Length: 165
Image (cartoon, rainbow, N blue to C red; front, top):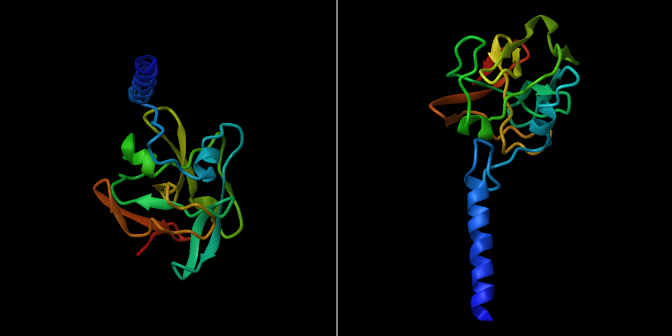
């Protein structure tokens, strides 16, 4: 009887391992982002970009329509993103299904989009592709500020479209 239970447990464990190894989709063990990244990939409406006062940064910063902090990646070249695969798991791109909209404090003239290599459309601001940080869980978090990750620094974005150092 014990050997049947042991065999069933071994088969279940192997099935879990096999399921987590398949394809390029993130595994259950991979960090998941808060609801902002999930909402960033909705293909229906345009994404709203606004500004908010950040207590951690000490000034106005660029945020999404829910107040979640947005970042730029120093390694990006122009409006082209260089953050894919593992990088995009930690730094999910801000995606949109239509033209982004300027909310309170954001400058419409600085908004734009870029097409990623997977065909998805990423929001840009001031010529920089925008990203979330997976450890930011709610409005006001800015835990990705000045993080050196995936070969370069990540900075919060100013309302003028520049990196805040």
